[in-house]
Length: 143
Length: 143
DNA sequence: TATTGTTATACTCTATAACTATA
DNA sequence: TATAGTTATAGAGTATAACAATA
Image: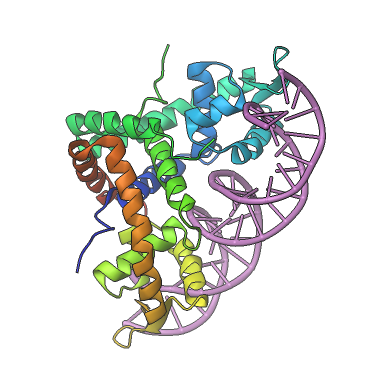
């Protein structure tokens, strides 16, 4: 008789993540959470090749390829071949992408605020620290 | 110059959740993470109507309807009408569902162990507490 | 041979809106 | 009127495997 799994970290992580995503979507559906994660990573870390971008966002290479295609079709990012290593694609924001991303930061801030309201400042800071530690650990065979 | 969003809770939550899900899938793809969450909730809390099940797992009603249909088609759960309130469906595990879920607990335990290995016992316990607090907060207009 | 990325394929999750049936 | 659940619809995320191009 237990709550072995439903009280566990994995389940609560999925659940909390789903709630945060739902909150995000309630404010606007122009960008999905993964799409904004990609744009924000480009904003905050500059242009990246897809492998690096995948690590920053925890999105696998084939998922990222289709996601990046969609953003490219919408004119929010550019893909150019890296001359130094022609296997690499340099992904960077267009002006339109930069604008769109800047506006979405308000949406992101509201989501962050909701979480902080729920937890309080101290616990929110603590949670952020722990998640960063966990987020940096790539699962065994992820490329 | 910042890492306003990529250092934030929402992004790290999505990222960590994705990593945990990837780890889960590496060990077997017979059940998805949301599917196991539903089966585990039924195991640990007993038969539920769909509204309650949705709250336990943070899955909205239409998503849950299709998910439950899939599990039902596979013979893992039963749906019966609650005689006391014929609007309600009582969702319960079949014997096959109980068996399948029991076997999947090993997969869940391995995932939990991976997280604990990454964080250490103290931080893992702390994270679990914080996530439960956040997971219990339903976003504004979720039914 | 190893790396980077794409494509084909398949399936699930996700959610809104409109709906049925109950209460 | 309100609640419980379904269905139609649409779209995105997810990942495996096979592949091309490059190193």
